[in-house]
Length: 177
Image (cartoon, rainbow, N blue to C red; front, side, top):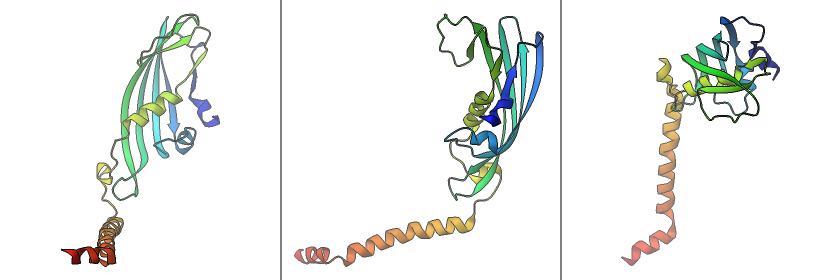
């Protein structure tokens, strides 16, 4: 959690209006999230906080590259990412029931800071393509690995066919015809 401490924005001392915060995201950031899809990356996050009387409006701009594994050849490649997101934070008394709205976060009035690390992490994770291929980043797949995978895939079917044809039980059944 030490790596995520820098992602806490204290908003109580800020004047009304817009304020900018810049964050550097690297491997230590992703290490803090267990079972993360992304293990490494170099990104910059710019967060603009618009402080108003009853709410905060957070605007996120995240850009950089993340390291992904190709689903086809299993090699690592750098996937460029650029995203813009917005999050609204409202203040409420603790006694009020929390609404289930994905666009609005409700904080207690006595809260003095907001941690944006989980929001940034979620935005990056959602931006990861469902299928990861080297071609998406303009790279070619590892030809040696593809050849090895083809050889192993073809080898398994031939071995299974040889095993079936050499089984004496099948030979006995063929004679019954």
